[in-house]
Image 1 (tube, rainbow, N blue to C red):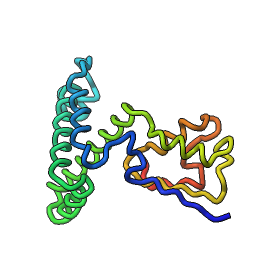
Image 2: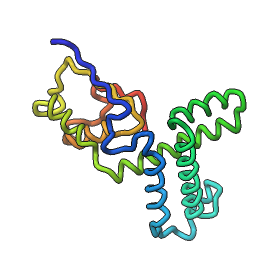
Image 3: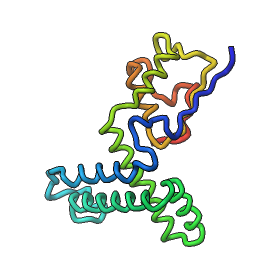
Image 4: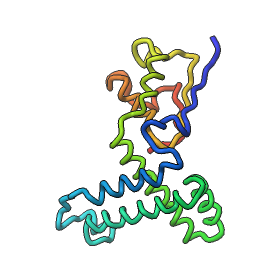
Length: 184
């Protein structure tokens, strides 16, 4: 039996998450949704004080501004990866300015993807994938198969938990055949 390695990367979650050219519009959707939402923020919030802001509503406003910044950067660059590389290179020469922007990019992009993945169902192709390789449960994953997930999102991880009962899988990290280089 030949060894097989499935690699999930850019485009693997196409039906759930935006591709490069759709990013600005999808970021706008999230920003509009958050802007129009009528959140009932507590008046006295200890968490906001620890962050050095007056209230959670101030965090909300800053986050919306950061989403608009992300949208602008997505529109301005060939891809968000290109922008991140640019910031990474510049941060080596101008540490504070660009290192802060790179950290901001990582944080806001991560938040955006988390929000998007809670709004959208898992890409249906993951169900097709599992149905094609699993007989009856995760313990019967063919031994010649390895899976590498190399993506910004956690669609693969969500699909594992969606397809297998919790008592069959304690943690995706416990499965020797899965390789996930990034952790949320």
